[in-house]
Length: 174
Length: 174
Image 1 (cartoon, rainbow over the protein chains, first blue to last red):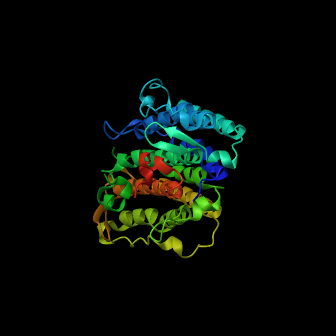
Image 2 (cartoon, rainbow over the protein chains, first blue to last red):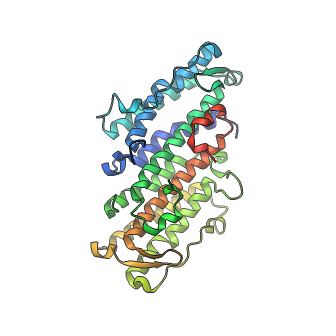
Image 3 (cartoon, chains in turn blue, orange):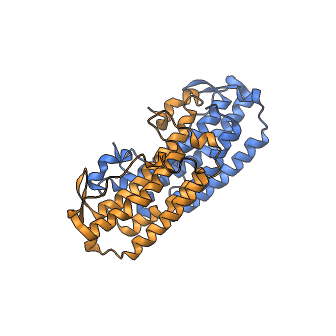
């Protein structure tokens, strides 16, 4: 499927609601336990999504529109969520994410990007040439990827609890 | 984490809301396209969850409570969603699932299962001996597994659209 802005925004605009439906008021054992040092809890993932709203998607779109390929994006810190807001409640993180996402979608709309502009190119510091349309598609898939990561983090709390049924549940595979 | 009924119900009760947040009013290309003959669209997955509410979880719990290991469960038809309600709108499927889930959670509560009863055993037609507590944990993980399947089905519509970013998005891996 080609990435059409109106389809992309359908997903982007509902991610905050999906995360609230999935996580708000869940008891802490579900949301704060990770599955080992290299894995993220649901709480960590929401922090990562907040950092993306602040530093990744719209800032990169602006760089493409203003500088094209001449200015590479700032590298994205994939571990920033472990720093500043560590003590924040999950509910506050969900609210903050929803607020930032709404602001960013309003900004995106105000940018009035034309069909031709969606094909403009930028420079990713590691991946090289990318287009504005690919950036938009990646924003969408990044949301879905991390929703998937959250449901996996929740499911794996019950890896032992399901007993023999583990064989039928692909989400519990290593 | 051990499967405690009150924790399990936290997840089970929010799955209908999560599915609505994720899918309701999404345009058809997102929800009705699968990714090849062996894969399910989001629409197919909701049909599968409905069939589980009708024939799997509570009926099997009743078999364990009434018959123990002497009566194996009916095998579960994993492809039933492709039969009766093929023409049903997605919104109607989401409503039907929410209704059945609410009914089943009420039934579960009315069953007043004791700590000792959660350890009762039943016979799965393929997996052999299982406990009532494992059945409850599996109900939860089965929900999460299929939410993960839905976000993967949505994400993979954009496998080509993300361009070079595919390398950073585990959900797009084959």
